Amino acid sequence: MVRIAVKNRDDREAIDRRSIAGRRIDVLKQVYADALAKAGVELSALRLGQIETAAAAVTTAEFARSRFLNAGGEGDLPALISAERRADQALRRLGLLSIDKPLAAARGAESLHQYMARKAASGETKGGAP
Image (tube, rainbow, N blue to C red; front, side, top):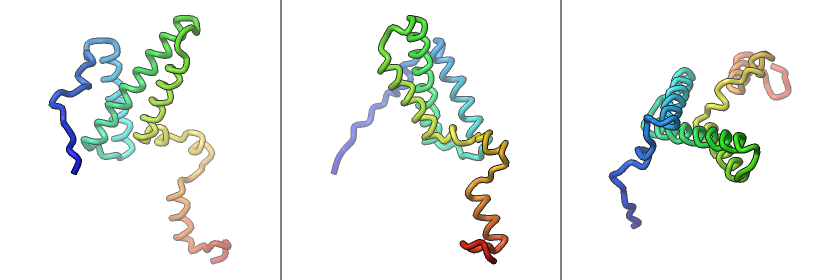
């Protein structure tokens, strides 16, 4: 049996919520929670932790991008790319990048679930004949 040591201290508290980064994280957390709630996603404790992680990752990427651009492109480009990739992964993990599909909606495209339900309701088979 493997035992895991649990810290009583929360590492996320290391970010001062009065700082610019701390305030940005709080804003993003609210935006992400609202977007997920609007999409009908239950905000469980696990999901709230993922929201916190995504908000921190996006804030880190934003600050790294700002620092890189303000330095005239001088700096650690691989670190910036890594921060951007991790922020994107955190948002994908939450499902935020797939909630809005404006191009699909503009074209009148339907989701797979809607398509399958329509096919089942009309009695169409694989070959298209009823």
